[in-house]
Amino acid sequence: MVFDQKDFGEKFFVLVTEDDEYDYYTVNLEKIPSVFERIYFLNQSCTNKKLISIDSDIKKDQLWFKAYHAYSENDISCIFTELLELTKEANNTMTEDEKTAWLAKYQKFNTK
Image (tube, rainbow, N blue to C red):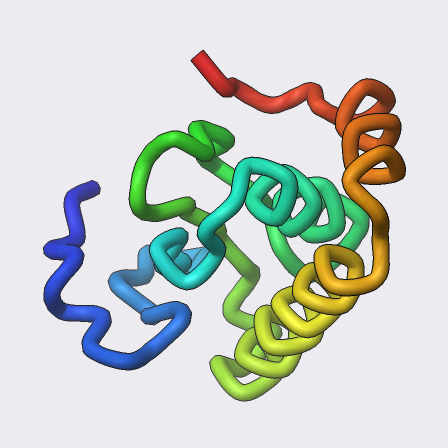
């Protein structure tokens, strides 16, 4: 799937399409500038049982997720908002040494 980056506008995520079982969302990684934040966000998203990450290339400008139709767009919006807030909080409260140590332990996504 391809989503034009300019179509995000000011939004952090967009519901792009759906099929018989899932809704497909894309997240605007331009709103998450650092490698630490991107990996932290993706790592935290993997702990949420309502979201399924279908893309882990944090060097792109978008990440793709899917969610069962049972979860409304509002439910998913709340999840993405909470994940972004957790990410920003971690970035603002952790020292550079703590971020480096965290990345050494949790950096398991495609960063090539």
